[in-house]
Image (cartoon, rainbow, N blue to C red; front, top):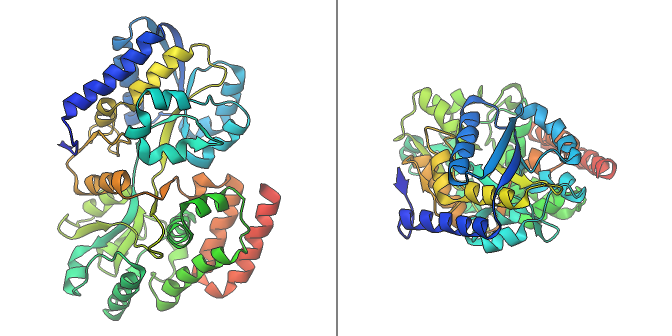
Amino acid sequence: MRSIFKTSATALAAATMLSGVAYADGHGVSGPLRIFSDMSNPAPRAVMEDMVARFTAENPEVEVELVITDREAWKTQIRNVLQSGTADIVNWYAGNRMAPYVDAGLFMDISDLWEEGGLTEELASTQGSMTMDDGIWGVPYTYYQWGVYYREDIFAELGLEAPTTWEEELSNCQAIIDSGRACYTIGTKFLWTAGGWFDYLNMRTNGYDFHMALTAGEVEWTDDRVRATFENWATLIEMGAFIDDHQTYSWQEALPFMVNGEAAAYLMGNFAVAPLREAGLTDDQLGFYQFPQIDPSIEPGEDAPTDTFHIAANAENVEAAEAFLLFVASAENQTLINNGDNLGQLPVNANSGVDDDEFLNAGFEMLSNNAGGGIAQFFDRDAPAEMAQVAMQGFQQFMVDPSTLDQVLQILEQARGRIY
């Protein structure tokens, strides 16, 4: 376990816990607390049950009723649970995925809890993604980074360094193509991988705020700024940056191109590391870098899908719910639940420790200290489900044939008018 604390980990964890306890004591925490969770897979379920056990041990006057629901089923059940008044706390996601429940008045604004609990500093990297209509609507407990995973040995063979600018990116890519390889592997059969490329190109071309406005339906898809994003994408496509026939592969089926050295890199989430290692690549062959800047005046925004807890607007035990959210958000708890024996992801609290893994460390450093633009949740979380499906079909079509851009943008703009 490696700590990146600037101060003593123990001292900070204790301070956080004391802050939570003090807040809780001041509000007389006791009574029943009803928690509805979608952490239904074996490892997340064990984490959830252990969190409840440790919280209850610290707050013996609170009687927790924990209901764990299938993760997919929860997506259609959460509204009914919130409306029925049967929950004090629920699991959900950050970003625009909160909008239906914020707009309907079903989540509680916990801005005061962030201020009084010290969360505005400890969870600063995700405050933007938890904020909507000038309120803060929950706390995050885990996320994972996206970025470019690449073959360090191929880069070394070609005398290349990880690019930080768009010019370096294009120069590297041309050298890789000249060596007979593709710059990037990708499998767009199930569409969402193309959404990752759009996220990064749009955030680097136009910035995080513009990207979030676009996914919220506030910007026309035919806007010249959107066209500029696609023009940057077309530059890569037309120079031959991507593997051929990517529309026939899943993301897993695209992995062998990188493993076999036919492609030099993969824009992907950190979950790709395990299968790349299992396929035989060593950590000496694998590297990671942040997606290069395109406009140096734009602060980098990053994709980091974030899972969250929220207090129901009609919660009956608000004081205990607030104490539980402070417990969840603490550095000590987030260090424990995200380690390799539990979720194997990144803690959100900047004072947490991270398992001594090259890629987790790189992601934690990037998201904690170099994501000033903001944290996006990924295209199919930030946009409404119907819009995401239409848009990602358009992204795939564009990657296959960039000359269809006008048609793609018209389809997306018509969908925007119908869906929002």
